[in-house]
Length: 99
Image (cartoon, rainbow, N blue to C red; front, side, top):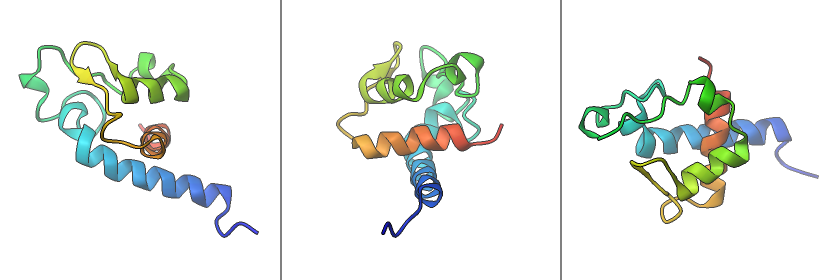
């Protein structure tokens, strides 16, 4: 018998993703995921607004690939920092964060 049901496991994943986002992503993407983090003014291009229709239209697999391999000009890939489980947790957090 599983010790954790799927709903609880998903919530735990989102909580882990939130912690990772706050530590690694928030400086560029901002605490509200709107691309207005503390480092955003220093970058050549504005970080992605993760609440935008464009970002929200991406599948989980597409978001996973962007985080792992990098996206656009400024965002490098995070494969050397995050495990696949970490990246799935971040995607889960982004999907569960209310706007």
